[in-house]
Length: 133
Image (cartoon, rainbow, N blue to C red; front, side, top):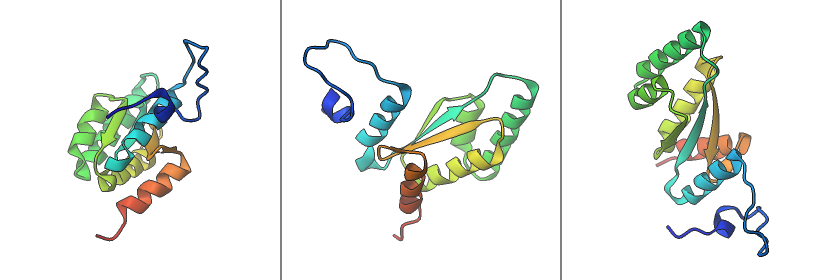
């Protein structure tokens, strides 16, 4: 992969007279998901709140639910509180995203797919996860 600032961050200001500029977290994850678009890689950014008893119960419940749905690798990574999950399979990404979002009030998740975030990413992933053979 041959990347440049202009290809990774096309909406970012790249002034020739500047040696430094700023990016935020979302810029970087959107660029990663855009760079991996041809491989249909979905990125789930996991948000684990400060640890308390309720969070641990929610995390344990979510891990159990993920195991129950056959998402063992995802469950193991969530149990380890991994912050980014990269999926090479849109079907499994869609399933994991919805399980995490729907089965835990304490743990949040943001989806990045094909350089998109939010509802646009969800719609694109849903389309790819449910396309006919």
